[in-house]
Length: 600
Image (cartoon, rainbow, N blue to C red; front, side):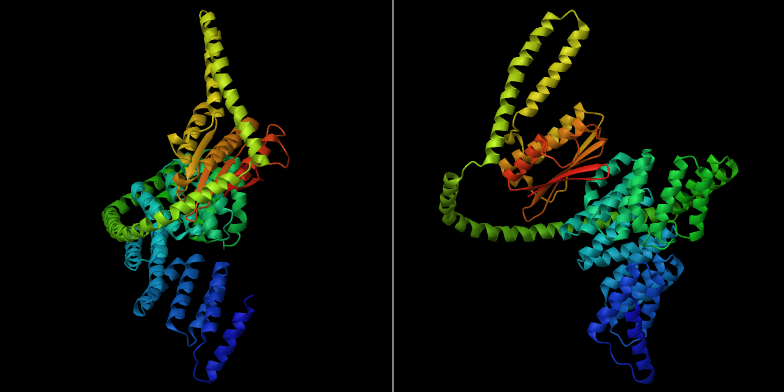
C-alpha cells in the first residue's frame, strides 16, 4: 500500500539532488498528507515517521509542513516514545505559531498536555490544556473546544475533582451534539462513564453508557471504540459480572490488534486482563502483567493509582513489606500534586471558563432575540393568509381518510383493552373488596387478596389508554418506567432522552402508539426473559426525525421470547402500530442483547 508514496518520494528526492527543488503541486501535497495520515491511523508509526521526514525535505507549503510535523509528533507519542514526542512538540508549536496555523498549534498544545499527563505531571498538563482551550474558544473553533474540554475532564477526574470533571465532560458532549459528531459524542459519554467509574458509581456509569452502545457499534475508529469500552469493562469488573467482562473484552480484541503493544489502547486491555486475573485470585499472573506494563513504559494512569494497584497485588501475594512501601509512595505522589498548587490553578480555570461560557450565551441569546422579532413579524403576516388554506386542506384530508386494515385492528385492540380494564376495575376489584370483609379474621388470606387487588388495579391502569393531557409522551414514558421499576425490583429499567428531539411537538396519535409499543416490548422482556436490565432510549434530530429503542439482556425461557422470525401476536401488534404512524421497526439480537428500534 505504501509503495506508491515511497516511489513518489524517491523520484522527487533524486530530482532535487540534481536540480533546484521545485514546489510540490497541490494535488501531490494532498496525496502525500493522506498517505502519512493513513500510515498513522493504521498503527504503522515508524513508516509514518520515515514518510514525514522524506516529505519535509521537499519544497512544500507551510500548511502541509505544519500538518506533516504534527503527524510525526503524534506517531512518536502513539508508539510509546513520549520523550521524543514531547521534545518535538515544541518545534511543532513554534512552527504553528510563527505561520499562524492555529489548528496545528492547538492540537500540538493539547497533545503535549496529554504527554505530561502520562508522566503524571498534572500541573504541566493543565498549563498546556489551558492554553489550547483559550485559543479554541477565542477562535470559536468548536471541534477543538470539544476535544480539549474532553481532555480537561479526564485530568480533573484523575486528580479527584469530580464536579469540575463532569462540568467539562458535559460541555464536551453538548458541543458534540451541536456539531452532530457521533464520534465526539461517544468520546464524551465514555469520559462521563469513566468519571463515574473512578467514583465507584459503577451502575451509574453503565446507565450513562449502555444507551449509546448501538452508536459505538457503527464506529470504525478503534481508539474511540476502546475509549468507550474501557469504563464499561471496568464497571462490570467491579460488579463481578465476569461474563460481561469477557464479552466486551472479546468485542475489543479486533480494535486492540490495530495498535502496537506499547500503545495506550493496548495497555488499557492489559490492565483489564490484570484486574480480571485479580478477580479470579490469580495474583502471580496479575503481577506478571503489571511488570509487563511497566516494561512498556506506557501506563495511562496517575502514579498514585499505579502504586496502589501494585500494592494490593503484593498484599494478596502475602508480601506485606512491598505492599506497605508502595502504599507510602502512593500517598507521597498524591501529596506532591496537592503541594504543587495545581488544584488552585484548576479551580481558577474552571471558574474562568464557566464565566466565559455565560458571556457567550448572553451574547447568543441577544442575537437570537433580534432574529425572532423579525421572524415573528413575517410569520404574523403569513399566518392570516395561510390559515384558511390549511383548514381547507385539513378538512379535505379528514373527509377523504378511510380506515385501513391495521387501523381497524388497532382500534379493536384498544376497545377490547378498555372494556377489560373497566371490568377489572368495576367488577373484579369490587368483588375482591367484598371478600376482604368476609375474610377479615384470616390475616394470611386477607394479605393475599390485598396483594392481588393491587396487581389487578395496576393491570387495569396499564390497559387504559394514556392521557396526554397529563403530559407529553416523554413524561408519560418516564412515569411508566418508574411504575415498572417499583413492581419489578429485580430488573433495572431505565429511560434516557438524548435531548435531540422536542417531544412536545409529537402528534398525540404518534405518542399513543409509541407508548403502547414500549408497553408491549417491556412486557414481553419481563415475561419471556430474566433481564438484568431494560434500557429505553429516545432519540431524534432537529429535522423532525425521532426514534425509540428498547434493549434488554436476559436468558430466553420459552420459544416466544426474543427477536426471532415469526408471526406471533406481540410481533404482529408492534408491526401494525409502527405502520399505523408511518414508522419502521427493526427487531434483532446481538449475542445475549435483544433490541427493538422504531424510527420515524
